[in-house]
Length: 153
View 1 (cartoon, rainbow, N blue to C red):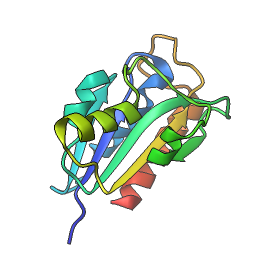
View 2: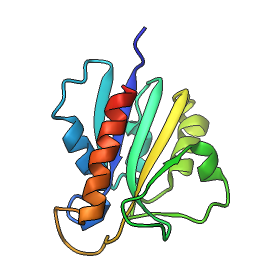
View 3: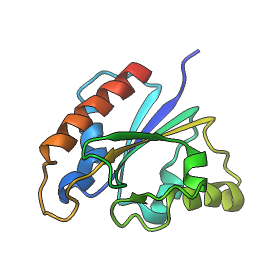
């Protein structure tokens, strides 16, 4: 039985490291992933994310993050991490946070969440410079995260 997986890339394509989630999707598009995998560009999402999350078994969200860790570090998070007091800031202007998006889907639309939700957050160095490329550390992390997702599928 195949696992229906959605990979949702978040970020702003023209703000240097904030584009990390989108760049991971671009790398994944270069592979034949099969019909059980859907790649979704969420951009800066906001409330639109409520409708972008598909009926799937596994949801993998890729975004940039700033926690003060070394640029290019990859944080693997789950929904429980969003509920905790963990002091992190998802980079960019996504509007409502992921936790609020999940709660809106369940409460207002009566839509179940995927059984497995994985958030791969790449530590950003620069989210202010207008650029369609990431810093070298984040670019390396983008490649690692794309490989990690390919191994997961």
